[in-house]
Length: 279
Image (cartoon, rainbow, N blue to C red; front, side, top):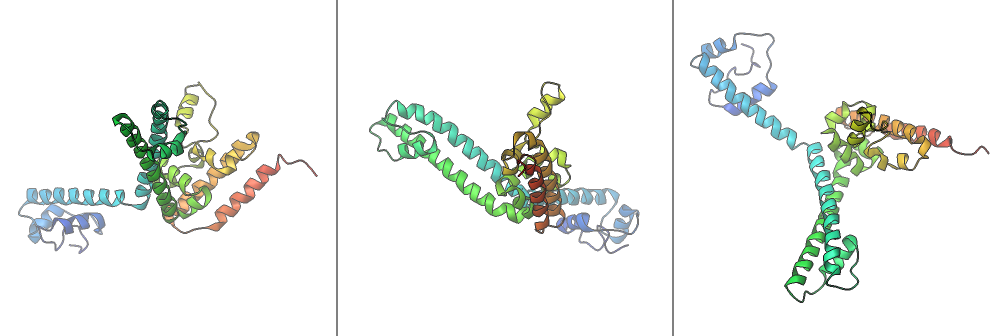
């Protein structure tokens, strides 16, 4: 039996080692593995072998899922989604707080800063206690969003150096999240990368109810929103093309390639030059 075959030479009770063999083991050719297992004493009979195989396969699957979930891109996805949730919830509650606090206090500010001011007040009764407590929750969510943003800005360049270099850490993290992971993003064509985040508009277009979207979340990039409207389609295509290349470089190599950014800058200079007056 090939020494690298799944269960050759293993202790029958060592499920963890058997799981490692399922993930990493190999054999030069197919064989009657149940019979081999019985002959070697690994299993009492064929049924015993399949029971061991089932247990090892389940352990290997759990280990693979845990490893994938703990991977850097998965943590980045969790962080950017949590950041967006905190920001959205804080802003929604800040609006509610402004209405409520405005009925009790004079000169109540707006937004998160208004909530910070209310949170410093000394409540005079139980109603004001609840308003001040709500303000404190709003401030806490806003502060947590900022901490998460700082984490994303530190982590994205480690997980996806080229993508973060081109898009900025937060947009890079959002692209990875929208794609469902760095590997998934690396496998998407540039046309798909271009419209990530514009799924509703894309579906409306497919139903014949709207024009085809020119861009999704990449609109927030200065190279798109900062370009003349008539050239934004070209800008979005150029940016998406380089982002797709950057994602592949990050997934398959993981090393920063400054040439990708240089090529994008040159392409964008050409696109933006279209609208400049002749000297």
